[in-house]
Amino acid sequence: MKAIYPGTFDPITYGHLNILEKAARMFDEVILAVADYTAKQNYFSLQERYHLCLEASRHINNVKVMTFSGLVVDFAKAQDCKIMIRGLRAVSDFEYELSLALTNIKLSGDIETVFMVPSLRYMYLSSSMIRQLAVLGGDLHDFVPPHVADALQQRMKGRENGQK
Ligand code: ADP
Image (cartoon, rainbow, N blue to C red):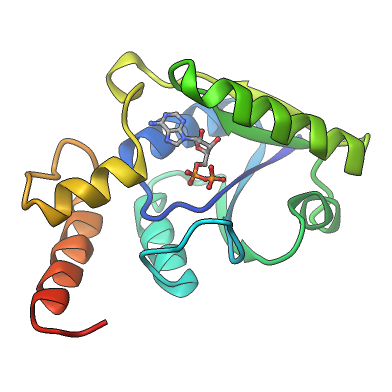
C-alpha cells in the first residue's frame, strides 16, 4: 500500500525523517509531499525544500519526493494514495492535527489519516525551533542532516550580507 506524508518541511528535520523511516517500514511506498502553498511564510523556497528533502531521504529506497500545490487530498487522489501520514508530537499538535484530519475527511471520505509518534528525542523538535536556533548561531547537527545545517548557515550568511 502507498502512503503520502505531506508537509511544509521548512526545513526537513530528524523529527520528520524519524516519521518517514517508520512509515517506509510500514508501507510499500511513501510519497514525501512538499507543499507549495502553506499559511506560513516560508523560509526556504519550494525548490529548496524539495532538494533538501530529496538529499535527506536518499537512503530510504521506497520514498519518492514530490512537490504539490492545491489541496493535499486532491494530490493524494491523483497519486492513488488513500493513506495520509502525519506526525504527532507533544499535546500542542493534537488539536491542529485533529482539525486538519477532520477537514480532510470532509473533503474526501476515502483518505484516512494515520498519526505516528516520533521517538522521544524528537518529540520537541520543530522546523520553527531550528530556524530560530540558526538565527542565534546554535549548533544544528543534532537536529538536522549536515546538508540542511549547511543550507541554514548559508542562508544566515546571505542575510548578514543583506541578501534576501
Ligand atoms: P505542516 O506545515 O503541514 O504542519 P510540517 O513540515 O511542519 O508541515 O510538518 C509535517 C508533519 O510532520 C506534521 O504532521 C508535523 O506534526 C510532523 N512533524 C514535524 N516535526 C515533527 C517531529 N519532530 N516529530 C514528529 N512529527 C513531526
